[in-house]
Length: 419
Ligand SMILES: *Cc1c(COP(=O)(O)O)cnc(C)c1O
Image (tube, rainbow, N blue to C red; front, side):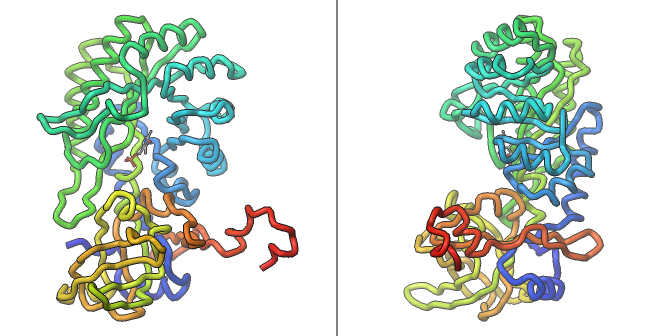
């Protein structure tokens, strides 16, 4: 049984204070999970988690992760600015971008971020920076299919990211000539994987590659970046990944491949997003409309603009009705938003308790890739974000958008802009 991280009474108090819809985050859960991750990789003294900012780009969340020892992984100019404003600098920032404008590289360099090159042609951009970075990370794409125990996990051959094996050698030679002294290696081969085998399988590929590249080029490697990809159980029937087993699995490969090659000093790092935040966020909405036609619909005051994953990926998000957690799930509903798009459905044919107008609807696992994927289609305004502190207090960490925000970028004559 999936239960919300707040009880119904607390939730209705919070909803009364802030008004729905809003994303609610659980500080206690975030901290405990970050501590488990660090425990699982404590065997590697250089371990660092660079939280993927795109998953939950809010300074209050980034600050909590900073206090837990995490850095940040940014992909764009604006994400770098957000990292800077939150107080991250230097090697606390990983810059893993693709199709990167020069301006973005310049800001990453000014902040002292570790730059993760996505392509061979990025080397030209590195040459144009005010100085050559001491350290550069390289992103690898092995092509073909990525399988674990004969099961195809993903298809890197179709992915736009990273460099081929021969391109890695060329990039390293060019970067060595420019004066780069330290190298890292990165790959992201599968997304939302709950198997405990993913990180160890990826680590084996990257560790063996580092061993070979160092032998072939003489480049000094100091870091392997396992990137993101560890999944969470969105569906109540799914098993969570066991982070302790994952850490131990990576350690085993580390001892088998890197230690005998004299590379036992390498730092293993990660860029997890979903695993760090998804379960510790709920989208809280109110049931505002009911409609009976060929099916039974419950309309919420939230829509796909607040959570795009069901519309975009057909993703399952669990739903509980506050205060009716233990009531019989004897009604079948489509739970929908108000966009003029028929994919604006949080749930299709979902067994739920009978829903009354005014009920608080809790949509689970929205802490990562939830608010951040929001958009303004149909003039829908993005929701607020509220942090539930470990001491039980709450804090508004982003206000909801207003029509003024929606109008702010329009270049209409001043008079007609006034609302
Ligand atoms: C999206 C992304 C991540 C985080 O992925 P999750 O699936 O949220 O763990 C990490 N690194 C890069 C380069 C990404 O694009």
